[in-house]
Length: 344
Image (cartoon, rainbow, N blue to C red; front, side):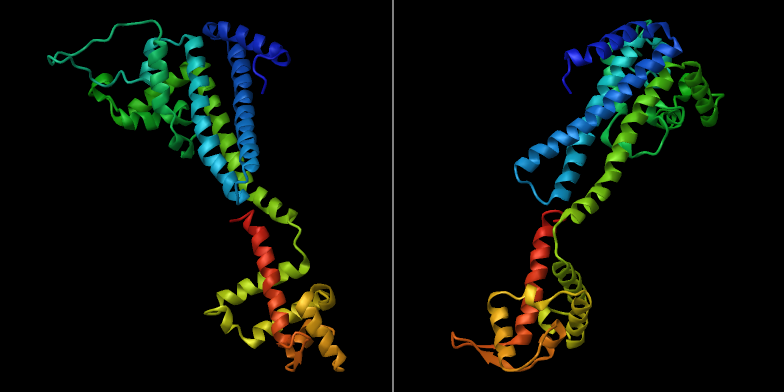
């Protein structure tokens, strides 16, 4: 991504300028700053994905689809947590948000604190929360499982105030005369009044979550693309698919029914898979020997239906039907090996 490069000088200068103006709470400045940070989140997560994949491919990690999932789950997701924490904390610190509003909406000011002697601790009032407390609060709000919740803005959104109120209702803070729904309403009204920084936080979270959802949705599409790129022949494809169906319906490969084999060979013939192109080595020699005896066999079904035996120069006796089934099984194995690199 070339951080600090000349190519990014204009972008970095604009970000620096905007970060110094965030405390003025101008909506246009916040919108532009957040948009730039959202772009950085998306770009960073895609760079992490691509670099991890490139590195692991060079290491020969297979199957590819499993490797892609591991990169997403243990690379991209974990980096998204780290990156969003950093960007959100920096945004709040630069905005110099009011201490009371921050603590009411996202902090832990509702938790009673007592000293070792048992006396209540009254926190010092401050205009803005400390950088350390902001980072600590955001680290608690942004976890891996946080991205699993379908909620606009996540914990930073208006809907998130319902979730945070459930965690810490703080009836003692709001007063005994208010019930749970009333507390939620007050916090959501405060959330709206704190725009633009509350809205900006929500947008940062949405950007990270939407990119994670997008990358996750691509995994299935990429698997299909990888499979379509495999150079499987028509023969290998048919053999793999039909033998798979036959195995699911039989106790073992030795229990394949004759009608199942007949259906498979019929599909091969209808798909114009030529036996003369697929038979090699011993099967080709057996087929040639059968033809020399006057049997005009030109398709797969004919090979399977032929019950005669032939003897080759090595003195061994062969059954053409057996050679045909072996060729199909070998083709299925080749296809399984290629697909295994993708699927696992």
